[in-house]
Amino acid sequence: MLLRSLERPWRTAAHGYEVVLLQSRRSIPYGQWPPAVPELPDLTVVAEELAARANGRVVAEASAPTPILVRATPAELKALVGLSVGRATRRGKFLLLPFETGGAPVKVLAANPMLAGRFWLLDDARERVRARTGLRLRFADGGELRYVDREMLGKLYLVPPDRLDAVPGWVEMGPDADDPALTLEVFRQRIRKHPGELKPLLRNSRFVAGVGNAYADEILWEAQLAPFRRRSTLSPDEIDRLYAAMSKVLAEATVQVRKLVPPQIEVQHREFLKVHLRGGQPCPRCGRELRQIGGDEATTFCRTCQPPF
Image 1 (cartoon, rainbow, N blue to C red):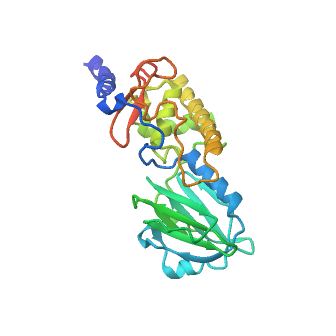
Image 2: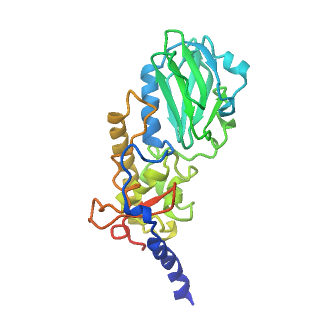
């Protein structure tokens, strides 16, 4: 009886390896990839670019053409006029844009782009306004910052700098996946508190913040761990391998995104990823065919390099 109970998780994982969509037999050309949630490398670079190009610029006009995307009243938006844009930062999957007077923050825009929200930094404010533009910030020296969300799923919260805890999901966030304070020992302690399969675990912002569907695939492939493995089955060495893979994949991806994205911060680049959405192609490590399951939230893996146990 005990033997059967121990076998069950492995059988479940192995069954998942056999459920492969027909669409995984073809690759997705660059430029035709479905919209994807901006993850830690994407938002890190967007924040860096905004810090370099928007910091210190004075807001001349603020409006919300699609007000459902902005959690702020018209009066609160109007109050941004005359304030200077501070240095943008990132926390988890939030982009943070402060507004200051005399160098002191007055308000913070906490943007959670979700699936398809993108920021546009334009030199000419007269450029055509796209459909589903949630926010327009026109600068006194010309140019404009816009937030466009074709799926209407993202949310922008305008709050005082000491009220970020009022933003949904903020308080529950764990440390950023690239936080230097998230040492191997801290990672070991945190992972013991979280059960379940590895891919949902990496995507759980309460565990670590900033990792989504695409980079979870990349991290698990790098660590040679199956996405269907349960955390409770990992050996200490495998936990250490997962931590090392997470650090390596995110750091290398951030370098790649820095090369590809600026100055077009509205464009998302994923063509350098090794496995995500490459079902049917050869595994870069062993050459066997990559497998892919799921639809829009697909999971891609190598069942040779990432055995179910």
